[in-house]
Length: 333
Image 1 (cartoon, rainbow, N blue to C red):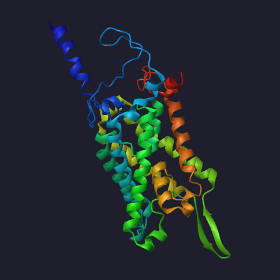
Image 2 (image 1 turned 120 degrees about the vertical axis):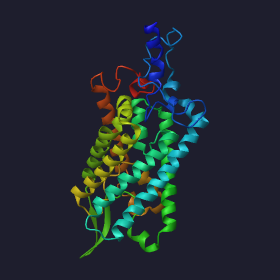
Image 3 (image 1 turned 135 degrees about the vertical axis):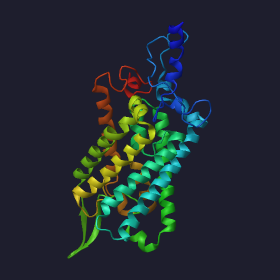
Image 4 (image 1 turned 90 degrees about the vertical axis):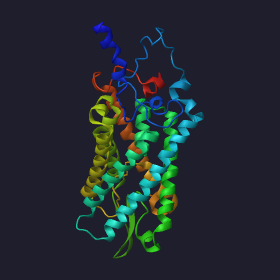
């Protein structure tokens, strides 16, 4: 009897494991948009299911999650990504403008601290709705790992880009013309045209340097912070508030480092968020398109490098002995 009573508690214990960036079926189940509790261990696709039957092999469309394109819940969840990205773009540049206009001694440090706080708050607000991405880097890497489907990632990235455009439009509507001419409305820049002794000159960072910074900063961002959210055991042990706070702090540090070590006028620092760079480029245009591809290609390479890392680590970590059904290698196979 004691043995039976003990075993009866196991399902209840497993149901209390909360996942910050869980599988999509756990985030959007039962026709709701709230994060659901789920087991900390993904089901092994090759084991016997609850009914004692072997699960069927997943089709290619199921691997890609094509059904997500026709799911109202997924599109409703993407509204959290859209609004979160809009607020992110609006807040980031207002932070930059306010800091530089107040003329502090260490503007980069103040900006980095405020960015860490804002990102943490936004993630806490968006996590219950969509899982809290508000960044194509997170959506794409989550799709590669298999935590969400590639179809859901495409929907989220589209919503993030639209949100970034709306945020840049909102910022343009409230700032003065003088401020708009001085700042780039939250855009990402590698170089800028500045007056020189013999006429206008281009100042900033070399293309190769900017690209490597995007790759390195993206990988460090995923490795040092998002990894804790992807690993269900760490997410449970630390709690989602702690994990999301670490994400914000790491991003703030990367902004501070990338803008300080280069010390180049015209370089706005590592983007680490292509949507944030895309929105202001659409609204403002001009020099914001110069080298814009760097802020997409760099993070993409960083995401792929992080995914390769997840495939070569020991199988004891990250529940690697189990297969997420949307894992990129599984899709290719």
